[in-house]
Amino acid sequence: SQQGEEDPQALSIQEGENATMNCSYKTSINNLQWYRQNSGRGLVHLILIRSNEREKHSGRLRVTLDTSKKSSSLLITASRAADTASYFCATDEAGSQGNLIFGKGTKLSVKP
Amino acid sequence: DTEVTQTPKHLVMGMTNKKSLKCEQHMGHRAMYWYKQKAKKPPELMFVYSYEKLSINESVPSRFSPECPNSSLLNLHLHALQPEDSALYLCASSQVGWTEAFFGQGTRLTVV
Image (cartoon, rainbow over all chains, first blue to last red; front, top):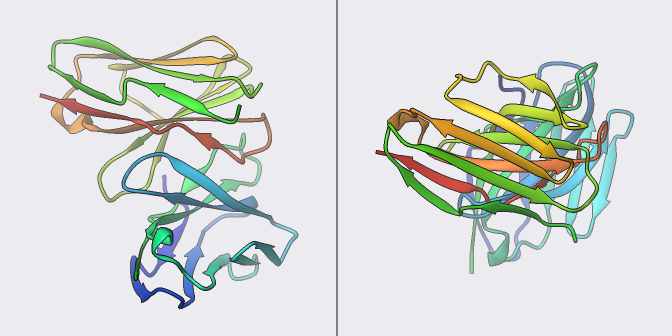
C-alpha cells in the first residue's frame, strides 16, 4: 500500500536556490519522516516530525506538518549540487506496528 | 556503528536458483525490515521482524522466505523467482516502536 504522494515528481533548480517538496497522506499518523536516496541506493533518514509538531528544522532543512490537511513540506535552503537525489516522505499509520509506508518521491536536480 | 550492511551488493540469478540476501546491524535495534524497490518507484514494505519474530508479511509470495536467526541478522531466502522480481532489495533496522529507520545500501537483484 502507498500512503504519501509527493509533489512535484521532479524538480530542477540552480545551486543556491531553495527547493520545496510537498507530501500528502491519507490516514492518521504517528509521525512523518523524510528520507533521501542517491542513485537508487540506500535511503538516508533526514528528519522526523511528530504528529503533534507543526514545524521542525535541521541545518538547511525545514519541515512543516499540517495534520488537518494531511500534508507536509520539506524545504531545502541554499541548495547545493550535492543535494541532487530523490526525496521520499514516509509515514507510520497510527495504530500500526510502526512500519513505514513511503510516498512516490520527488527527484531533485540541482544544477551547478 | 550506525551501519546496516547488506550482502551481496549485486546478484544475478536464474529462475531455478536458490540464493540468500543477508543483512547485519550492530546498533541493538530489535526491529528489522525488508523492502523491495523497483526502478523509479518508492520502497515497498515486504516483511517486518520485531524481537526476532515475524510481525508483518505484506502478502509477499512464498518464493521469498525471510529469516531472523538473531537480533543482528536478517536473511531473505530466494527460490524460483521470476524476472519481475528483479529490483533493489533494501534492509532496514530501527528501535521497536520508533520508526526512524537505518537502511543498508541494498542488493540489486536481477533474475534471468
